[in-house]
Length: 67
Image 1 (tube, rainbow, N blue to C red):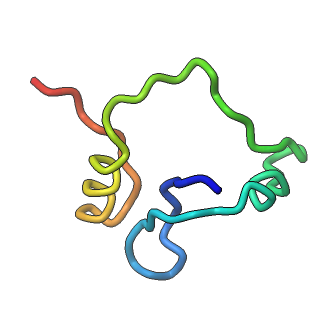
Image 2 (spheres, rainbow, N blue to C red):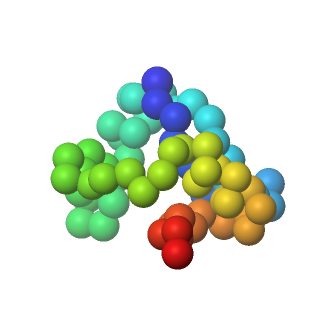
């Protein structure tokens, strides 16, 4: 099981929860391509910070760099 920010599923705000790995493995995107792990990405902050901003703004956003 993985934690991940999900689009609003009709709740009015993004949710953070558990998703079975099998569900992610069955997702197909454009051209039938599967979801992949980006091995070169670097976190810009902790997951709770993304969740807090997403809940407050009611959509998934990128964290802004501290000025």
